[in-house]
Image (tube, rainbow, N blue to C red; front, side, top):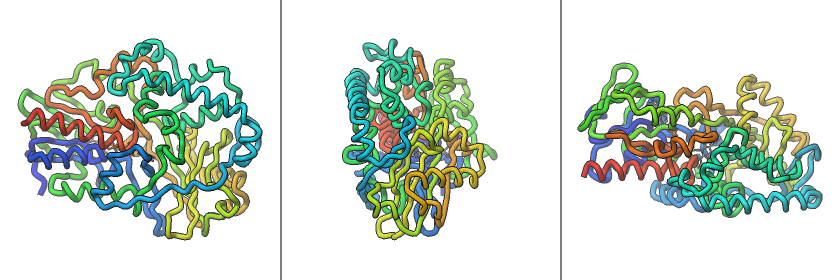
Length: 452
Ligand SMILES: Cc1cc2nc3c(=O)[nH]c(=O)nc-3n(C[C@H](O)[C@H](O)[C@H](O)COP(=O)(O)OP(=O)(O)OC[C@H]3O[C@@H](n4cnc5c(N)ncnc54)[C@H](O)[C@@H]3O)c2cc1C
């Protein structure tokens, strides 16, 4: 049975909270996770659709997500490679629909321009420390402009500029006019180089998936700490003193501990009340790190018909509604599955549409790229995150101009007995599951050191 007394209280049973709990337990201390929802996993959510796992939340890991590979191996979750054979379908800046080879032949110069800008981004991001981005030599200059303004100043052709915008929104899920240029460089640096961030093939962030679905990871982790996990316990107030913390949940449940780890995105952490109140400095930070906006929509067909036509199931479009897509078939199953991404403005707009309207508009787009067979899916499902009370948007927290340089030190620094986790506080692969694991391990290490 869950106890209302523990050494370490952990708010949130997302990946970072579960990792923190497991680490604390392994060190000989008692954790207690208080989770608002009725399930574990947070931004990891696998739903069954006609027997197939649909990843409404996190889906892939990449070659340098070493913590996630180790975790999957430890938990006995097998992985498989993302399908990546054939050509991508493009429609950009008025080109009409073009298959990959034709697009590359026609726009070789534009792609070379883009490559030059990506190399420049790699050079600049190398100056940014992912633990302290505000200390970069040009931090003040870079944090005062948006990524969009910097992109606009590079003199790119419409095709190259459009492609760069789509790729960036595909990662940050907000328009680049809302992103601090320093935050973009931080993001690149936490992931390595732009090639790792943007590529889908070898070396990219989306090379590998989990057999049975990503939710296998949090579910198997939860099984290891099941006696220390309480559901339906939204934390509303944290009272913190010099030697204990008391957490109050909606419904009247309370729990007392020696330390607390808040494993929530900064924005949700800011919605909890603290007594005594946290400094204005910390609160101003959490007011300025809103979650971005993304939706995923899945079409299931009787077979992956695009593969036989030499297509890889990926589209890149500035007409939309989706800017990008992926082949997300499950090995060993004959169905064809296409995933479409609605990110940034596309997600914000289409969340107001009915599911039937979204499905129709996306079907029209798929037919443009993959032909008439795309008009006859067997099943459809899409997943919205802004309406989910315990997430309120994804993929992660965004920083607009001047946030890092003004408030950056408040992001992960413990305050008294309160420690901060969540992928948004990570220094490697921040925003990804890899970052969630890193942040859970880091917060647990802080607590263990303090209690030992
Ligand atoms: C659509 C989508 C696609 C993604 N794709 C990928 C991908 O392909 N690869 C990848 O690596 N990452 C991906 N991500 C990101 C990845 O899911 C996250 O980085 C990671 O899961 C975050 O874990 P976390 O523990 O930091 O936060 P969360 O998962 O947000 O966990 C926070 C937990 O706290 C709970 N909670 C909230 N408020 C309270 C409260 N007041 N009291 C108690 N509990 C509370 C929530 O219910 C939740 O369980 C994706 C995310 C989304 C949504």
